[in-house]
Length: 256
Image (cartoon, rainbow, N blue to C red):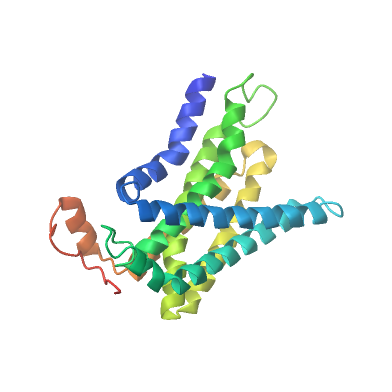
């Protein structure tokens, strides 16, 4: 059963993200480089959060302090990679002008790749220890522990991966258009979902629905907003699923 738990949770958490990577990024070396760069920026945010928590931890054991500063550092480094890519945009276009890549033809694609890089690295660090523990020895639940801890952790990790991807699109687009309420939405919703995850450590799993349901509601709202700022529409989404308009853009505003 431990092996089934491991593979079930791993595929639940990383399956959709892996599919996105294989279908939209793996064939383009430039996208892979940008993905790795964004993952590195997320690691830098984690490093600073760890250093701060090491300092603060000597005075208090309140994990909420570390969580708040972790979110602040992540959004700060999201902004820094935005600045870096926008400054290097002209040079990168010149570097790849002879390559078969479309990442710089549409700024939203670049934001999507960065967001997925943040999400994949966030998901890896969120669940890797849990997956290792799921292999045993032993099984949860014999002494009152929540027996669904592993699958809830996987579902929450999936939510954060997809949220980071959508947040990346909204964040970049809001800075390009100077629609700063969208920037504030990304930061506030990130803080909200992160704080909701604290409920998972309370009362032997009784508060799992209280964290998962609002988090996925935020995910739905965020994905809808990301699609809107990227120029998507209901008609375009329907055409994409039906395989129509293959030779033209599906209501997507392309920023040259």
